[in-house]
Image (cartoon, rainbow, N blue to C red; front, side, top):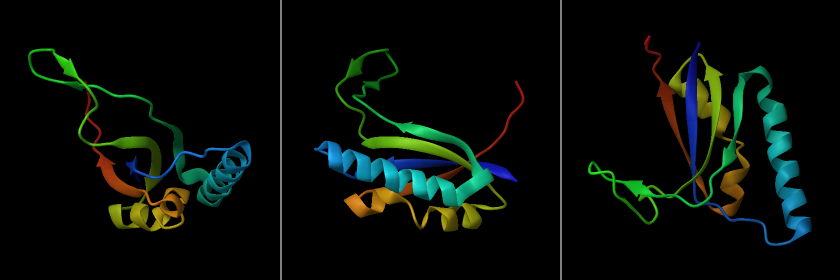
Length: 105
């Protein structure tokens, strides 16, 4: 088993309390289907900065990441399969799946 980072891009932010409640319910339901595969449910991202090699930070990073989660799965294909029901798709977002390669420090 390996860990996989789900990097969310796009998707809309709920504008009303009812929309927020519905969105949270959808995420809760999806996470419920993942069960023990969830390592870290993650968080949405707020404002960001792109830091250059000289240490300067300008505006938002180019990636436009909106959040993350970490799952465990047997393979990249298995992790990608788990993503298929992700609620971010309902609001036009996408998910990139990356294998986290463990290293010893």
